Length: 367
Image 1 (cartoon, rainbow, N blue to C red):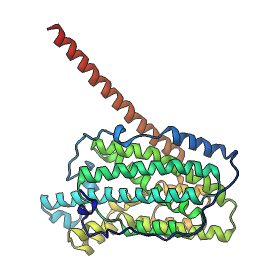
Image 2: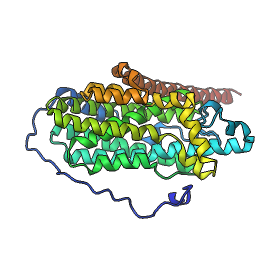
Image 3: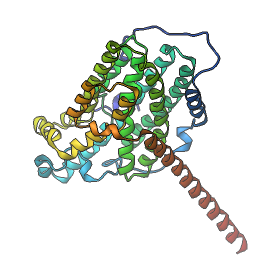
């Protein structure tokens, strides 16, 4: 079935063509490189995996609640509107919420694939090109994975959120080679990593927990890549150049804050938009949820040196400044450990299954 048949609103069958500026940069220095980045490149090679084989796609999901989330994770939970709804109407909101959420994950991964390919072209250093090439393969795998999940498990899709589309266009369309890094590796990937982690930890659907854990194992490397390269580069910028990047960060962070408001769901279901958006804007739970999504972005911005009073003030206004204290290294180590535990659990389950088959065959032979 074509993807266009699954969208909740008409989507143009033409490609979305984002004009790109800047040069494709080649260097004739083929020796050496930064040890930390080359180590990350080796890790990127070692950690490649197959989404068709590593994930147990036979696991079923509930189409009305694809991640198995608790009721309070619905954007409208606790509102007067939610309390007035029938059980059937709530189920429909939940079904669309799951479709909308994983559709945005899918669109974000296509954006990440395109931007990482752009980084291979535009970044001047060979060690950065090496690692970015491994990320291209990672993002293709993530796009494959989320595409299969949306098609086979949900069978309904939402168009790309316009705030995400705008940040993607800004990241791709700037001629400065570091802007795709900053837009994708820090803002878009940072937000995605936090969202994946949040849903991985609260979901009860085994398939969702598994696929998010494996994607996060890759994404942790991508964020580390952006940190390493940009921290070195931004240390050399003039105050004017750094201020330009800080403006990009502030605007991009505001766009990312608005990315998960759910407006498209309310419009699709013809719900009272003003009432829905007022609840999203004032709900303590939604405010906390949106704040948690900045748990990876804010400490990265501080770490790479874009940490002026203006940036701190903007993050204070967004209510996310306290995330600057987060330990990124510990968070990324945790992401890798969780994915490895899923592999161990799956291997143990498979070993038990095979042993049960052997035992059954032995009993049959002795009868």
